Image (cartoon, one colour):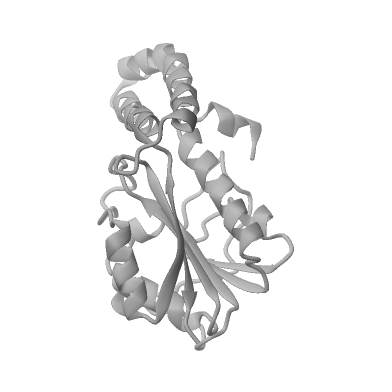
Length: 234
């Protein structure tokens, strides 16, 4: 993770994502040929360094100075948003992953069905998506799904949920919402930006305090994000 990431107001979610992706990869031996759907700049690519890790995204994929320096290996077809089909044969990959993409997909059921389709039998599918989070990348922010709905969709596509991680807790969720509000406030005009810079250190302190408190006080109903691992049935 780049040094500047530690001074980002998005650090909590990136911290939890990296921690839990590493946990799943190591514990469940996620390796082989892997496709990352909506990979962007592949901010978590280093975790899959021992695999044939490939990514697909739009040609106009989002670029972030804080996260990743890679680029997609494949691009969605021009008519992707008409059919939402991936350009791969059935069972082309040993495993599939998708991080912070599902909330932006107009048809999440189709996205999950496509992840299952291109994954080999008994392969693993790792999905991360927000639960409590501010609107972002508008207007392409379509939903927040609970693990109950995700389990239902995965089950209908021949997959069994192996593990669920609820990332963050009450205090880090509150700090993330405050951080997003500060970002939204700062971009409105020059005065707001100046004021946001002044209060920036306080918001950084609050986010790290939130992560620390999360360690001692957990909530099962208020948290930032999901990481869900499923296995495609044989």
